[in-house]
Image 1 (cartoon, rainbow, N blue to C red):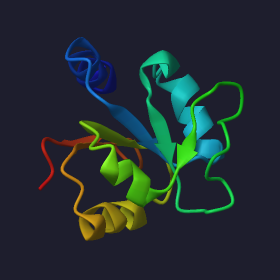
Image 2 (image 1 turned 90 degrees about the vertical axis):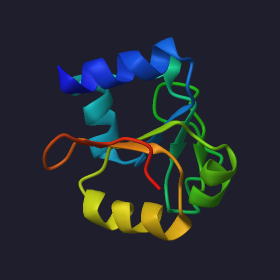
Image 3 (image 1 turned 90 degrees about the horizontal axis):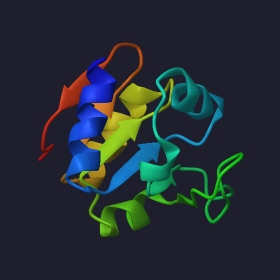
Length: 113
């Protein structure tokens, strides 16, 4: 319910939404939490071999963390079981986005940085 409420807020504002994590957990999270794919602008992944590819069954492009920062997202949803490591990357890159982490528990940080 919390995930749905947060997403609704950003969708209503027509905010830029990115997912972080182009692995199997990301796909499972999209389906399990009914994250509306049509409102996801990009997927971030640290693996350069995935950059420029499209995620599984849709046309969401996978991009680098640096490119994601240049797009100035309003919300980043961490869809990876490596959420703690990803949070360190987000802090290191100094994203100015709200962060929704869904693993191991749902947490939300508004306007990070």
